[in-house]
Image 1 (cartoon, rainbow, N blue to C red):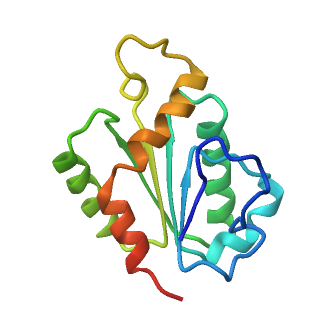
Image 2 (image 1 turned 90 degrees about the vertical axis):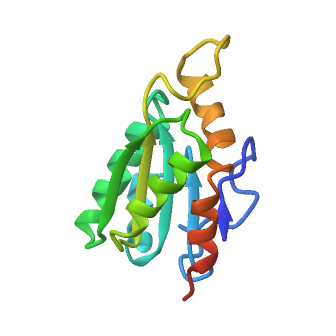
Length: 148
């Protein structure tokens, strides 16, 4: 399993682009990659989560998933409420996983990601995505069910 860990310096751990055959599946949270290097991931199993209010990661992942589709990948997409309960997220994950695609892409609806009392801007959305995404149990379960 690979996770884009919060606040990690770029390049300090293996990335699925560099080692596409190393991981059974990858969990990409608020990811930002070089669009020209994603082709090796077209056959991989990915679960991607971004916040629509993240002005860098969301448009970037939209382009990346479109590029992966051009390479033949099938991508399931959904918009989820970032303030959903664990039960609601379980339903969301089950619905997306049931589609059976190798790439699952969930965008957290704008305005539902940043905690109350914090400024709702792009960087807050980016940073708040990790807290939400890493607490969605069903995605972790999906990751661990994957194999090469």
